[in-house]
Image (tube, rainbow, N blue to C red; front, side):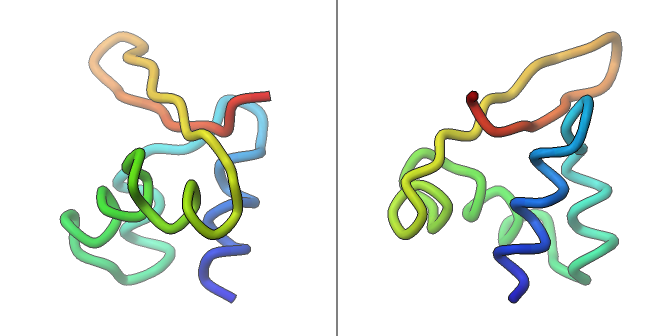
Length: 65
């Protein structure tokens, strides 16, 4: 499923960027942000907490261990 693909991207070393998810899933920015948000499906359906870190000029997302 698309959710499992996004979860795999979030679990990899260094996480992923919004742009990488958008490109891989062919989603628009608002759709991607909604999935990653605190009230998004990753939190509601899967019980995962997505963390966001700004590294240099880039924001990276990953799953809280």
